Image (cartoon, rainbow, N blue to C red):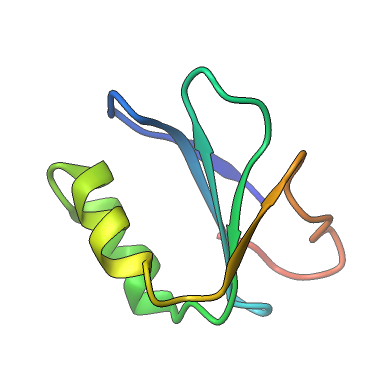
Length: 81
């Protein structure tokens, strides 16, 4: 999974695995990140185009299942953005 660095005071980077519909968010000043599951591709695209990105991501992702992880999932076997 490729992690895209973004301009945000809260979010450091965002990654997406389209095959698994995983969305990974890393935060400034925190180790690890949050893995969101069952996220459709259009949601990732919308987040990447949003301004401010952190407020939009927080609003849109609150209803998707997620958990904290120390590192992004290994998605080398699947395609990524």
